[in-house]
Image (tube, rainbow, N blue to C red; front, top):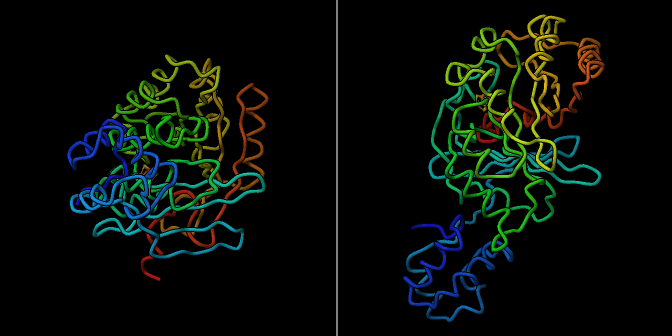
Length: 333
Ligand code: SF4
């Protein structure tokens, strides 16, 4: 049966008419789904009993709880959700003054980044807007959501844009788009995200030289990092909306002075920030992580040359919840 979760106001109004309710019941449905976040039709007390029965006969709500949970020593929590035959993961990251959820947009991923454990899973399907929103609605204290879990969000752009609309629309959760960041390796569909959403963007950069980047990120062949940056330069990043670049540091691979200089050259004139990420070794791949001192040098070099750069703190490493570690390990526990 079709889920109501993930439907826009207009679609909920159509559902209302289809089951014999008035059009205005569409707005009531949106309230129950997106504001009150009910998990059953019986809770929709301002919808007639007959209306609720008619809804039950044709639709589900689309909500389901995670099937497993793992808690890290640093408080990070990883959740496993069943989506059809597949399993996907979300990571809840509590901090002093905020709580962030990292959500998945696909089961597995097609992009095949060589350093990423999720990439080794292969692709097993797109998540619907209901599957994306369900991950978020399982937590009622979130201040931020990042679309950085399993999958390439721009490769599932329709469902991602639909979930962003519901999170930010007045009839939906009415969140500020500033609370949401969507990541990408940089593929052509990102233009739709730039045009149709106001949420922040995080680009997985990892190497400023196109040829070197192509060797670790096959998506470079779909859209070169030079074209990604050229596209971003056409948009306004000087007000509320932000763009950042994720940069995993590997010893001798992308943390040299040559790379720092090229990075400055590539991003010149773009109002952005670079986040350096410590690589999690132990993955069965031949990428040596940069040491802390080299990362600090790299950060200082970029910062001294007016490119805002930070070293991002890593969370949840012990439960395989950190960047590039989502491999549904919970599933095999
Ligand atoms: S890093 Fe992101 S885009 Fe690349 S394979 Fe992993 S999940 Fe996919």
